[in-house]
Image (cartoon, rainbow, N blue to C red; front, side, top):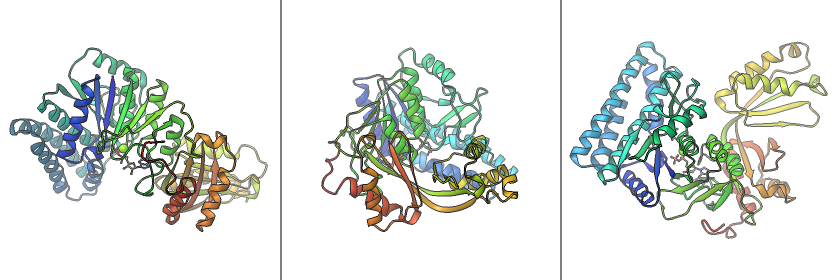
Length: 468
Ligand code: ADP
Ligand code: ASP
Ligand code: MG
C-alpha cells in the first residue's frame, strides 16, 4: 500500500491534473494506492482573502464567481461533456455552501476561526472531486473521499490536533476491504461532533502521513514541483541540488526553519511507524526524488542543507535582576507556552543578562504583552526591563547529522558570512548538533543563504541532481 499526495503546485490546471492522473495510474499497476490532494494552486489563499473580504463588508461575489469559473473551466478541459457536467454540479454544491457561509460572515461582520475553517475546506473538496473524475474518465476505479469522515481532531480551528487513535480506527475500518482508489481531501478534518477543522497551512502532507501510518503503508510519496528536498530553496539558490536521501531528523529541522517542501508535523506519524517519505516531482516523474528514513549513511558532505524563515521578530528580555536568578527562563517560556505562542529560536548569553527569542510576526503583540505582564513586579522594581521587540529578521538554519562528528563547521560558516559582510544578530545550536541557526536582517537573507551554500557546496563540487 502506498499513499500518494499531490500538492497545489501539482494541481494548477487541467493539464496538471492529467499528469497527476497518469502518475496515479502507473502506481496502481504495482500497488494498492490511496491518494491525498491539496486544493488547486492559489485556491486556499483565495479562500483566505474571500473570507476577509466578506467580513469587512466588501462585495465578495466577484471572487466567488472567479473560484467557480476556475474549477468549471478545469473540469471542462479535463473531461468530456457528460463527466464535466456531473462534476460541475458537485462543484456548484460546494460553492453554494460557501456562498451561504460568506453571506453569514458579511452579516455579522466577522469570520471566526471556526467559520474560516469551513471556508478553507472548500479548496480540497473541489480538487479531490476533479481528480476522482479525471481518474474515472480514464477507467480507473476512483472515489471521492471527504477526510472529515476519517480524520478526527480537536477544536483548535486553523491548527487542529489530530486524535490518532480514533482516526486510525476510522481509516482502517474504511479501507479494510479493497475498493475503488480513494481520492482524499488533504488538510481538512472534523471534531468529534463533525464540525470542520483544518490542520494548519500546508497540512495536506500531514493528512497523507496520518493515513499512511494508520494503514501501515509501505511509503508515503509527497509529489510537488521540485526534484525532492534540495540543499536549499531552489528559488533562493539557483545552484541548489536535490538530495537522494536524508533522515527524519534532518528534514524536521529543515522544515521547521522554513523549507516548506514538507509540513513539519508530517514527520511524526511517518517516523512512528517507520514509513519512508519520498518527495518527488510531478514535473519530472521518472526522477527518484528524496527518500526520508530514520538513519542514513553520510554522503561525504559536511552539511545536508540550508533553510530560511523570513519575517521573524526578535524579542529580548533583559535586566540586571536576571543574573543568577533561577526560574526566569522557565517563567518566560512557560507564559509563552500557555498562550500557545510558538518560539522558533532561543538564545541566551552565558552572562544570563538577557534572553533573546524569535517568534512569527502574528505572535509579537501577544508575546510582548504576556511577558511584560509576567514580569510586572520585577519591571516595577527595576530588575527587568520592558521587553524589547525588533522586527524584520530572518532565521537561517544549517542542518546535517554529520555536523556533530566534524569540528570546524561553525568556523567555516561564520567566516563565510563575515566574508560577505553579513551581520549576525543571534546564534543558536541545538545540543544534538544537528543544526546551527542564526538570525540576520531580512534584507541579508538571500545573500546569507547563498554565501553559506557556496561555502559548503562550492559551485561545481556538488553531485549532479540525485547522485548524492
Ligand atoms: P506543494 O504545493 O506541492 O505542497 P509547496 O509550495 O508547499 O508545494 O512546497 C514546495 C516548494 O518548497 C518548492 O517549490 C520550493 O520552492 C520550496 N522549498 C523550500 N525549501 C526547499 C528545499 N530545501 N527543497 C525543496 N523545496 C524547497
Ligand atoms: N491547501 C492547503 C494550503 O494551501 C493545504 C496544503 O496545500 O497542504 O495550505
Ligand atoms: Mg505544501
